[in-house]
Image 1 (cartoon, rainbow, N blue to C red):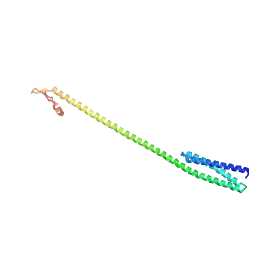
Image 2: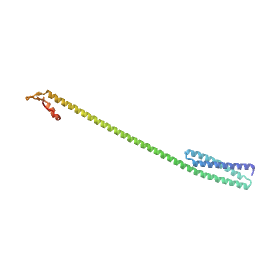
Image 3: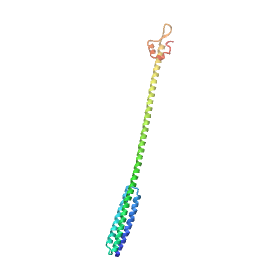
Image 4: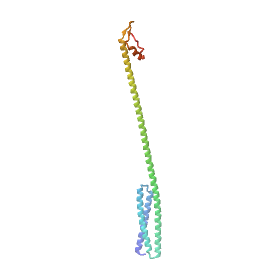
Length: 211
């Protein structure tokens, strides 16, 4: 193996190991990722870049192996290339599994947030219904008070009308009595019409008709 080829092979192997470790670290970050989805997308973009660099270095190593003069050195390098390819395939499998785990975690988190949002909506709905019931009860109470006050006002008006009517009747009654004339027996007689007025107010019969 020429010196220049040996250096290139060593550089390829070092780069392959470096990219392999970086891929494994990113895959672990994906496993630990709990969202959001944009974070997962960013990690996957980095993994793709590292896989491209890794694949490129493996291809360079494979090309160097084919250029070896000695068959033994050629087969040894081709075996290393095969091992690196297997390792890369293993990393790709781990990458897919990590993505699946991460997506499940993100979905569960989103579902939990939706459930919490639903609870808040139900609480708001319950609060609105409670406020509506309270408002309805207050309105009904105010309407009841208004009806009661209206009835009291009506009763007061009726009582006032009764009182005024009674005063008028008494005033008329005593007015007729004072204006009456003496009859032949020395008593007073009511003018014409007074008797009919008294008959319309039977509750006043307890008063004497003459002195």
